[in-house]
Amino acid sequence: MRRHVLTLDLRDDPAEIAVYREHHQRVWPEVVESLRRAGVHRMEILMLGRRLVMILELNDGLDFRRVFATHLASNPRVQEWEQLMRSLQQPPSDAPPGDWWAVMDPVFRLS
Image (cartoon, rainbow, N blue to C red):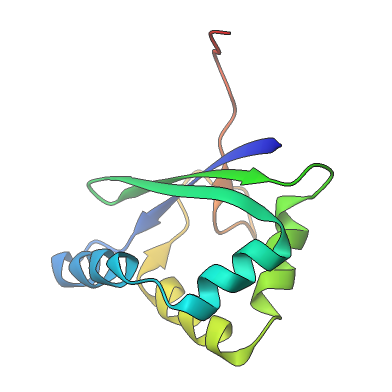
């Protein structure tokens, strides 16, 4: 398993933040199935204020950008979900140009 940690911000609107939370209480089955088929072993999204942190574990040898491209192309229902989520999100201000979810750099690990 390979682990990735990414971050993203929600838009600064309490109503939109509530919508984001509500949707993640009931993620559409097509989205969950697509993520698993694309190679996601485990995913967790954590939230503090508007900041989201995703911990993503992929099957060995997979690149997370390719996994998400495969996921997005899997079916129209997934595309609808991703478009809805994107309407509630914004990349962090210090994300590299073109990135939406920004990769976080590890600074310490206790093994």
